[in-house]
Every structure is written in C-alpha cells, then in structure tokens.
Length: 328
Image (cartoon, rainbow, N blue to C red; front, side, top):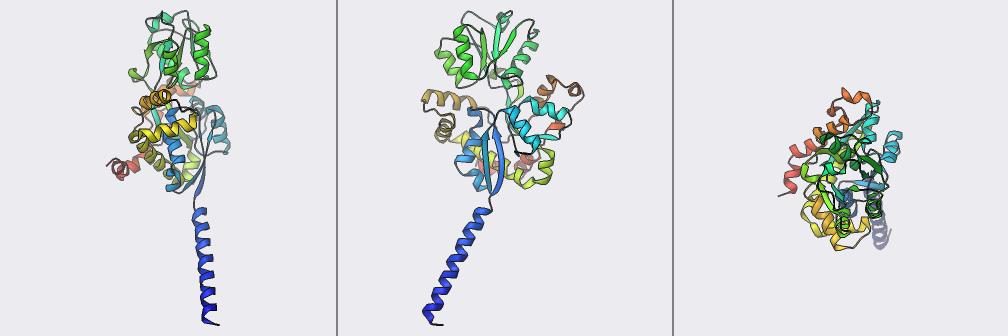
C-alpha cells in the first residue's frame, strides 16, 4: 500500500477510535433517578449539583424531578425512582415494614416562622383560632403539632389546623381572613412582612430537631448500588460547599429553579438557608425521633430512630478527609 494510503487508513482508524472512546466516556455516566419535593431554596445544593456539573463530575447522569413527597414515596417503593426527598409518609412506610433509609439530612431542624395578624402577641393568643399549614405530614404540619404539644394545647381542640396547598396560599388565606396565622418558610417570610403581617414565632430560633428536608432510599437499593449512592452523597456534599461559600452562584441557581429574579426574594432565601446547610449532612437521630413521636403507626412507640437512618456514606467521606479538603 502507498505510504499516503497507509497514513490515511491510520488517521481514519485513530479518529474512529477517538470517537468510540468519546461515546464510551459518555456512556460511562451512571443513570440515577432522584426527586425533590418543594420549589424552595433548601434544595439549592441539589440544583447546583445538577446545573454546575457536580453530578457529572462524580460520574452520574441524574434525572432530577420535582415530585410531591407522597408521590415520591410511592415511586421509591415501587422502584420507579432511586433516591427521594420524602416527608413523614416514608417513615410510616418503614414502620409498616418497608426497608427504607435516610442517607442525607439536608435540614435537621425546622427552618420556619409563624406569621399572624398584628393583634396577636404570642403563640398562646391563637387559642380558639385557625393556624394554616401546608399538606398533611409536611414539615409545617409537624412543626404545628410540636408547638401545640410544647404549649400544652391540642390540635382541633385548642387550635384548628387548616391544610393549604402551598406557601403562596398562606398569604392569600391570611389576607382574606380564612386563617389567623400561618407557618411559612423563606421567601414567603418576606411576602408576609410586605403584607403587614407579624412574625409571631421564630421557629428556627427554637432549634427544634426535625427532618425539615432529607434524602432517602431503600435498603435494597443501597445493597445493590452502593457506588451510586456514594457518588450521589459525594456530589451533594460538594454542591453544599458551593452553596455555603458562593452566594452569587447559589442565588442564580435558586432563581432559575424557583423562577424568580427578585433580588429581595433571593437574598431572603439564601440568608435563611445558608445558616442551616451543614458541611457533613448527617441525618440526626433527634430529628428522626421527632418524626417517630408524631407518627400514626403504633409501632413508632417501640421503634428506634437508627432503624431508618444510614449515615455510613457521609461518615466514610468525612473520615476519608474529603469534606475537610473541600473547605481548605
């Protein structure tokens, strides 16, 4: 064969090999299906991991979808998603025999406030009144029941709890007089102040342990896919570092996912959650115990919080020095 012909064949083979290699590298990304349950700034680390290539950096192609917590729980237990952001219904499923495990604690305390009409001076003033929360089993619902218990009051008897579809509905219901107070999170806290409402209780300042937001999967998925779970946790931790240390990037991502460019909203959201994201996002035992204390299933009385927690992935990454290295 002529020398030029040999060279042409060689170059053609090389290009084909490089193309195949590129396709292979793309194929090496491991698919993983995950959810988040609220269009709220608490989930900024997940959104950063998706938008800024952190999941990709750790070899994952994550299909990240918004899904209400109850729907997410059903999807997880049916095997149609891998990692979810659930509420109390997943713990109820665990009490019923489902083998579930929380692997990340996004927020281990209630990051919320109660806003009310200005005439109320303290929480006990709401006796005989109507308190608005979001969906049954949600963080706001659980926080309301905790506060009532601490005040020696009972839902339905001393204060009526009304469930609304979402945070925007809370401000509307307050303005229309359908409720007397409502439990809200940022940036709805800003909207409440702008509407002339008063912060009656700063729930965040009370440091109440509860799973405001967490990520969970099944024991079966962990056993079959430990590498996938490790990569997901690692990416989440690195994205949390970005969220904690790069406010402009974080606010830009929050704005995109919550569909707002309102600077005041973004500042309110970021300044609220940056104080709550933890470098090592363990799911706390006291936070899980709170969920068990208010669970419907009688099995909760004898259940141990550790039954529903697997902190081993976060612990391994912390022990390896990975987290410390991120914050150098």
